[in-house]
Amino acid sequence: MIIAIDGGACTGKSTIAKLLAERMDYLHINSGMFFRQISWLMLSNNINADNYTLNLNKIKCILERYTFSSNSMTDKELKSQAVGDFGSILAQIPIVRKKVSDELHSVASQKNVIIDGRDIGTTEFPNADFKFYFIVDIQERAKRLAKERMYDETEENLRKCQDELLKRDYEDMHRKISPLRKASDVIEIDGTNMSINEIVNQLCKIICD
Image (cartoon, one colour):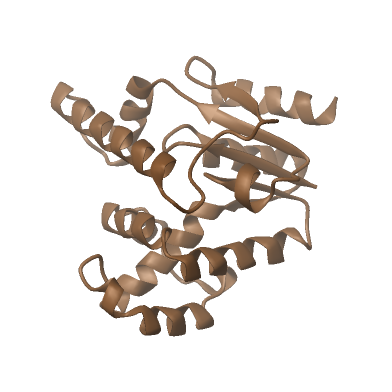
């Protein structure tokens, strides 16, 4: 079985997906981590946002050696802003997206999975057994991002986080390759005023009923 969870940044996709997978004894896959791992590898090989267009052959060679299960990066390394920002750029390169897609389908062909991302229920697995789309109020998302970055919850920091999230939303929704959008048969989940446990319980009920 394949359960797809899509949505913007800081909507709780990965947290909920991980807990839901534990509850159902499924494998959780955070597709964004694939791009972050590749981003980290590129940055470690001196490929960055300024020179990546000149290094497409080198990128291809690195991708040929990459597998999701062979990574050795720490969460701190993968969740840095630099890795995330460059990962968003790499996600628009066809050969990078194909590599991630191949890895996703390889894992999903062997196990029951819950996969979260931005194009899982639309591009990657349009025939997923269940498709969920998470939304959360932008102010709440800004608070979550500030907490993740360990910022003080000042008005200035929250505004900066909100601006960053709105920018990421726009870029995700308007990119040429696999933009963030709702599948026609998706189930929308508004997690603004719900606890993590309430959302997990709701998804379990929908899937198991």
